[in-house]
Amino acid sequence: MSTVTPDPEFSLRPSGNLARRLLISRAAQGGAVIAAALAVVILLILIGFTVVHGIGALSWSFLTGNLPAATGQAGGIGPALLGTAELALIAGIISVTLGILTALFLTEFASPRVAAPVAATLDVLAGLPTIVAGVFVYGIVVAHFGESGIAAAIALSMVMTPLVARATLESLRRVPATWRDAAAALGVSHWRTVLTVILPGAASGITTAAILAVARGAGETAPLLFTSALYGNNVQLNPLHALPNLPLEIYTLIETGYPVSVQMAWGAAFLLMMTILLVNIVARIGLRRGERKRGL
Amino acid sequence: MRRMSALSPAPPLSGPAQERARRARLRLTDLRASRTLTVLAWIGAAVIVITMGSVGFQVIRGASEAIGRFGPLFAFHAAWIPNLNKLGGLSYLYGSLVTSLVSLVFATILGVSIGIFLALLAPRPVANVIGPLVEMLAAIPTVVLGLIGIIVISPFSAHTLEPLFHGVLGWTGLFGAPAQNGASLFTASLVLTIMVLPIISALSRDIFRTVPQELRDGAEALGATRWEMIRGVVLPTTVSGITGACVLGFARAMGEAIAVTQVVGNASLIHANLFFPGTTLASAIANQFESPQNSLTESALYYLALILLIVGVLTSIVSRRIISRGAKLT
Image (cartoon, rainbow over all chains, first blue to last red; front, side):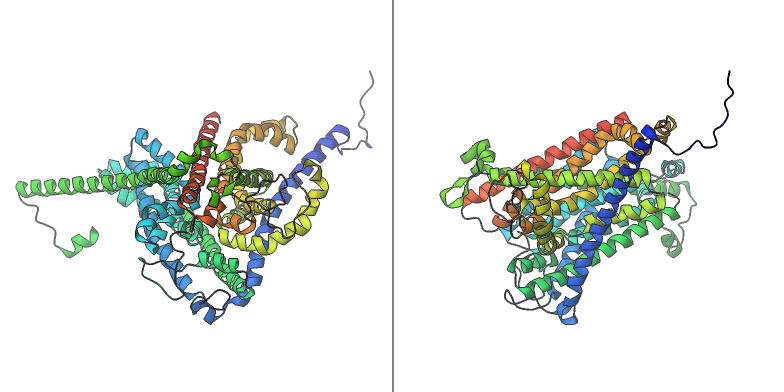
């Protein structure tokens, strides 16, 4: 029997098979880090190019001036800014109302048997290609009444409603069951519980959902292509007419290919993208704050 | 409620008759309010269901002329010559499938890696910053992405990526000689990758986070390296969820119209070479629906929309199935 004596020279560094396994593991982890870095770099490049190209186009006359009277001419984007704001507002009202009601229906009023097909329909609507929404509204509204802001808002709200409904659904489900039980124990009727306990409890989530949906809708192009494309070059606020809007204006400005038009497209793209990204960031931070405050 | 009682003096609660009347009034209010709310909620849900139903109805009705004329073989004819009433959807379907699948390959590799990074490798504070940044990609308006696609990504693709892919993978036939201006199926796939990536990375991050800590600890306690733990435990338990995420990403790519139209070149050709211009279902509709040459062409465009709609409904059902089955298993 020989006694085992510790070898002071023995290396604790992995060798052989273990070294190989650790190397593979490191490489895989490195790959994941690189992928994440790549995504962030792509985001920064996209933002960077838009800022660099777009910021030079900005001026007071660009922001307030009428759209170019003819292709290839210089002009502003004032009417498109107002039109997009109006479209987002109308579509926002429609989709927030419908979205909240549908979410309430699914959590509060429907038996599981009814809720399942409605939830599935909501999923299908969420996956509806935006261009199909445009084609649909063209068929039922525009073909009969011509293009209008209302038609465009309907098409946009088809894209936005599922977003509001899903996010509302999630925040409704996160309202603690104990709150509901407490209300029931106090003898509060169901509708009063819904309006004064459950909805306020989910308020921050619903607000975020509404803001994010409006931001998404403001940037959508495809639903407007056949519903609000034939607009003039000056301010139009009557929703019964086609409303000038930023996404389509960007789209058509690029199509023309004139340098002055492309320059305007960059300016408009800069405004649209920055507004949407900022709204996104603010809404998300607000949501986190709101949830932390209530200890959720 | 509080304001009401502050403004009007509380009603005297003297006689039992008045008390009964007050209760009856309350019950009536309760009944009415609860009925109103229920009805409103039902209306909301009904609008959703009716809208979706009429989308299907409207698109099928619009396509009926083309369906009657060409039948289901429409999807397998490549010619699209409106003047001669020779219309087939194959080149559009081909372009849609190719761009969606190529972007899905890129986005899955990147997205799942990002999901692994965010859920399993990065410290929480880092993940809480990187995660929302990646999701921010989804907030970029598609028309802006298309603009960047034309001016930045197309030349980059034509002069840098396409020669690279041609050199390394040219033998597959998919990556032929690079095109001149970069308006190609490949560029469209790159733009779509940017759109699909945030979907897959966010979903896979959430799915990876559902893997129980004990399972992961168990693997590491048995001596598995981090990667072996991921490959042996995390990926196998979440494979169905990841598949569901990919299906959703695929649906997103198939349905995108604007950004693709801007960079794909819009030529109804069928080439194995991804560097040639092509077209897709959605961009055909975006380009031609406003002023179709005749009623049959308009109907054929509705037919393309119908194909898109069917793909959308199928992917939605499939992803729902996959994800709910995955949820049952874990």
